[in-house]
Image (cartoon, rainbow, N blue to C red; front, side):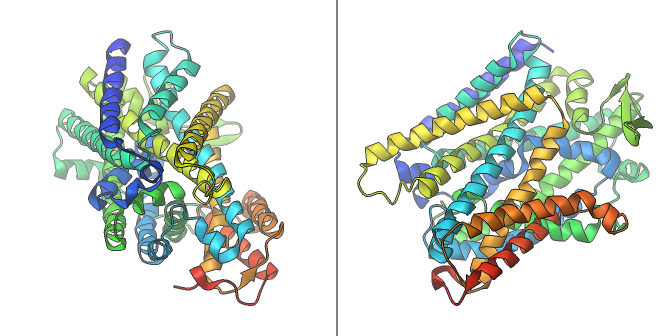
Length: 509
């Protein structure tokens, strides 16, 4: 397929986003950027957040997991569904009652400045690394399959994509993102369904026979009953619930869109609708994964065990290439399917890229402006000066994104993605502990260095336990419950440094 043709579609897609941004950002101000003037339509927010919650990592990784893990990933998705109820009926009422723009302002009012700044900084660090890791993964796919053949260097690809994101987010912010996310989610779903339909047709399968083929290859296996495994079903479900509570309910990027909805009731409907839609979409991605492996087997692909660094590792070879995991979708889309499917794959991939990057850039700008430098609380600066400061911070974070993506490319280690994404379990744990302490207790914490120290010690202990859990606990492996353990250790640490009753502004609901 012609790289120039693919590149043309990428730019055409971007100009469509730019047109939407121009239309939605007219007469915008700082409130438009931060919370969309609290006028967002809940249905648009719910639909658009599917794209944000999936990201480019999901687009290429979830189908790839089926080869080894079958439908086991859906265990975590079941947990997500439970977590969304907690976010909808515990956290959202709190945020609306306190009329928050940054959700970390809750920590300021309930626990004090030290807890507030610590929570905001943990979010900024985690979201920066997580978003740039996802950005790197997608940019690298575009680079390998399109831009290397055109002689375009990786740094220029990264620069241009970030410039695109800046151009359509720097003015309208959340208000623009609500609409662009809706457009991008539509492209993701259309691309997903077309790919599923085409592969089913090429294998002469209907819905019934597809299910039968997936079952015969053991791809439908769902529950992992090995309690020592990191993927044990109870750990996955409970961990998935807490992942949603922490990475959605305690995440400024995700909540910034929710609290841009006019009323609490509409925001809750948005959250519950998102939980259902996300479950359906992830399930279809898993079906696509099974179909991709069936298609590759039909083309002569086969699984085999190989010894890598002294450990047995599963590979899936097709025409001499190992395409197991993240590689299977792009390899088949570009090398074994018609050009139109390759174009649809690229549009779906960049549609998954932009929501995770543009929302993160906007949320990081908002959190730094509001939580770190106190932009909204400053009564001396004029509205125009605040706007200029906000735009400057936006550009600085874009530069940080650019540098982080280049570092990932320089390291050039695929495992770095897993490592950086796992970092979320360490950085969101203290946030979970801080919010849980504020909501579940009425105790007071004095401002000082103890809160950030506890929030650093808890992840360090968790890392140590995770590294040696198999040795200490007869083969037991720490999985997604790492987040819960991290939050619990933070909570216990806060109990030790607290006393009496604190400010009940945000206390027990």
